Length: 216
Ligand code: IMP
Ligand code: MG
Image (tube, rainbow, N blue to C red; front, side):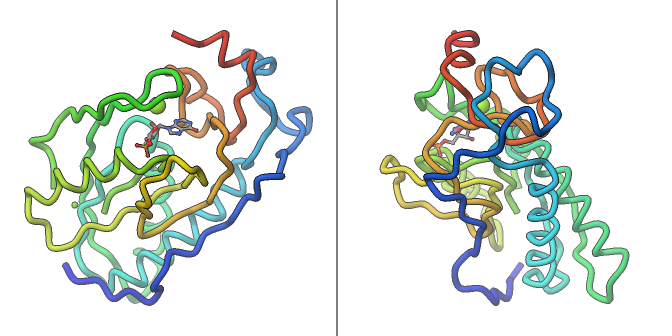
């Protein structure tokens, strides 16, 4: 699978460090999380609009080549499903179309806030376009990429909804990026804190109360 890359560097929507997000009261959030969030950083509608654009970029770049879309569970499941829905919509409404199969892999890398070892569940299922929730240090992705290479895929492209601006970054950058975000702990839209907050539509900033309440 050869891809024609029209963009030399991934473009993204940058959310600046001094962006405090939106007041919680202006959006619908579940009652059980009201006390645990600082603010809404990326409203669900904006996530969807940006994802629609990423789908278009991907379809243009793939030039009709078949793709195995690999979802990195659990954090990317919402992004993956929405991205694929937009790609499917483009497939059925334009001259060009990308044949898709899907696969899933579970990576476990987080306990509270600090990265532990990256564990892969379901390695035997692997094949290649990888959908990711968030890249912080980049270590999880580097581990997965070296694993994927064992299967000799023709090409591997990584799409991540979020990339965190952090001094802890190892320098890894995905091929497609939704948003570049400040160095805060984010939850919602399937991103979790110890398995909580996946049932929240917007990407929100977790507050100290939430960290304490749901810590392990
Ligand atoms: P990395 O290996 O440091 O890039 O960590 C990436 C993984 O850590 C992601 O797949 C998430 O599971 C988790 N992670 C990193 N930052 C956040 C965050 O702000 N919220 C939720 N999970 C995060
Ligand atoms: Mg997690």
